[in-house]
Picture (cartoon, rainbow, N blue to C red):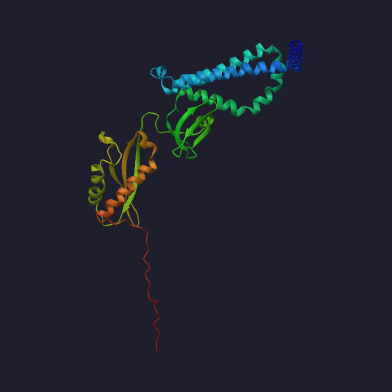
Length: 305
C-alpha cells in the first residue's frame, strides 16, 4: 500500500513538473518557448563557454605550444578560437532547442538600425582588437605609454579592450580603438633599450673638466649604477646643454635596458642622488635663482643760495 502511494506521489510530482517545464511562456516565429526550452538553451551555452575557457587557457599556458608559438600568436589564436566556440555554441543551442533561425530574420531586421547606432563603439573596438592581434604593433608584454600619460605593461589583448598593468600594479582597461585612433608610444617594439637624460646644473666658475671628472668618470667606475656598458655608442655621456642666468646646465645621458626601462623615475632619482653627493663631495656649488637688490641714495637737486 505504501509502495503504491509513493509511486502515485512520484508520478504526480513528475506530471506536475512536466506541466510546468513544458508550459509555453511565449511564441517566437511559430516556436513555443517553454521553461524546458530555456533550461536546455542555458545548459548548452554554459557548456560551450566552459569549453571555450578551457581551450583559451590551455593554449596560452601550454608549455609544449609555447616552444613553437610566441606569446602574441598564442593570444591571437586563443581569443579567436574562444569567440568562435561561443558563436558555434550559440547556433547549436538555438538549433537543438528547436528554434528556426530563419524566423529571427524579421526580428534582426527590426533591430538592425538600433544595433548599428548602439553598438557602434563595440564594433569599432572589436575590429580594432583584431587589427592589433594580427598587426602586432602592440603585443602582450610590451611596455607602452598612452597620450594621457598612462604607462604600463600590456597584460592581455582582448577583442574589445586591452589590459595594461601600471608600475603601481593597477590594471587599466583601455578600449582597443584608442590604440588605433590615438598615438601610442611602444617602448619595446623593436628592442628593450631606452635612453634617459638626467639634468643638473652647476654654478658659474666651474670648469667643464671639473664636472667631467667629478660626475662622468666616477659614474662610469661605479658598478652598482644600472646602465649599458657593452655598447660603445651607448655608454654614459655628459652634455652641456645651456648657459642660463644663474647656472651652467648639463645632462647626463645613460642607456638602460630590460626591466630598468619600466623604472625611469627610480633610475632618475638614483642618479640624481649620486650626482648631488658627488658635487657636494668635490665642493662644486649647485646654483639657485637669486636677486641682488642695490639701494642708491636719491640724488638731490643743486640749489643756488
